[in-house]
Image (tube, rainbow, N blue to C red; front, top):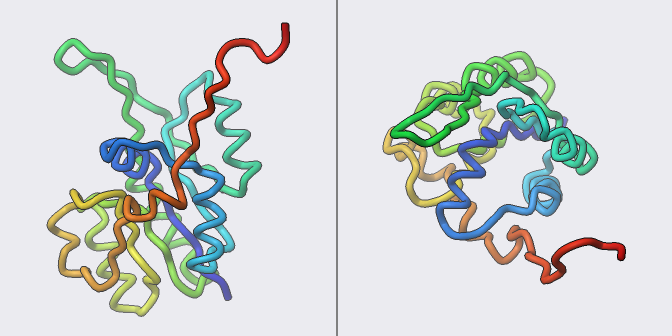
Length: 169
């Protein structure tokens, strides 16, 4: 039996960006496999029309995508997009729980407190990967199971290229 990862993509992406860098999702998938023996990585995200190339890339590098329709709204005059996937993530963990040895949960969201508690009580949590040091205080009681992903910047950062413009004349 192998470990499975369950990724709150918005929490991960925004949490990493807040520390000043971009996550390379291909490197991250390899990292999950190599470090935590993750054979299936479920990535939960809000579906946005026009991002099909991104979704194809994520599937190609080994993620299983679970979509929820994204909601567009305005807050303080700024356009925002929300794809709250908490319920989908929890339900998928529960549905898959007999198929994995341990879960790797990637989120710093306190909404997952009871899921983490449930997994710990059943010895089914491998690790809780939080994007940065600013994760929910509700999760602090599981400090021994928490690892801060921003500490792995050297391994997981998306490299910026200096090539700009068209690739062909």
